[in-house]
Image 1 (tube, helix red, strand yellow):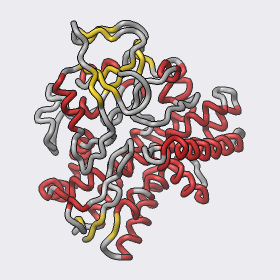
Image 2: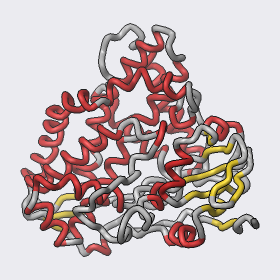
Image 3: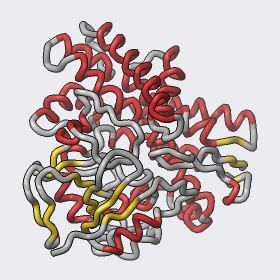
Image 4: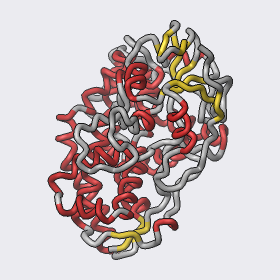
Length: 397
């Protein structure tokens, strides 16, 4: 069987919640296609069907670690994976690295965190209400809240939080080039290394203390601790932009907003449907390498070839989700893959869900007349970035 042609997949600057037209075309072309991204070398396989995405992300024949040894085609201009990063670990290393921080992200830990997170959010929303409309929700609430919560979980001192946020924002940006990303990574990872070193004897329950103690016990190296902490710190950015997209949809679809206000006890399914629907990232995430020949849909993926999966495409698979391009508030079942799948399922998924619920509930309940302060087409969206979302969200009430 002839392999499919290689399709160029440029990094499109898409506004709003528009689904990537290149990805939509690839989905129509077949379950397994080939793509060339803006950076790196060569081409890669792309899986877009739900079942294939689940198979590949849970199959040890596809390795993340192997990607660190070569230059595969990719979206990011800069590629320097760090030792210890969960994102690049295969089993059994993945479980060894995840173990020291697992306790900070359990359902129980999140229940204990919830009152403090609500307190932090109430302070932010109180100042918004006090100052009166209009307000930029991104600047006033959606950015500072996840930073504050993630910093609480990580154990970042208050005086360092703005500096850490500046680094993370640059790291996930596609603008500024490799030099800017290098400077931001050097700053943040250097700060993390010093903090972990200072907490080797700590009995604290924050992530940096847990990592410091694990280094002290010899369970992981300091270099691995730094590689673990960095992506967890950066993960707070995703909540900002995912919630920005969700709120934009609520503010531009009156029937959806009415549903959320009329049935506050039934908001959970709507949040799941919005998580399924929103295009939370540009292009695709991290690749895997086939360790042996694997056949899918009559196509042979040869050992050594890179493979990407698209969770965005899987979440719109018509075989799994009826009418996938429409928001169905009470969709049931809704087995979306917004937080990933398999061993690399998002470590902070429970934390992200907690923050999302608090943000949506608190803003809708405290600001009953919430509406956009500008026409929808005047909302400014982030450009040249891997994580999509509104740059500003001007509202009134």
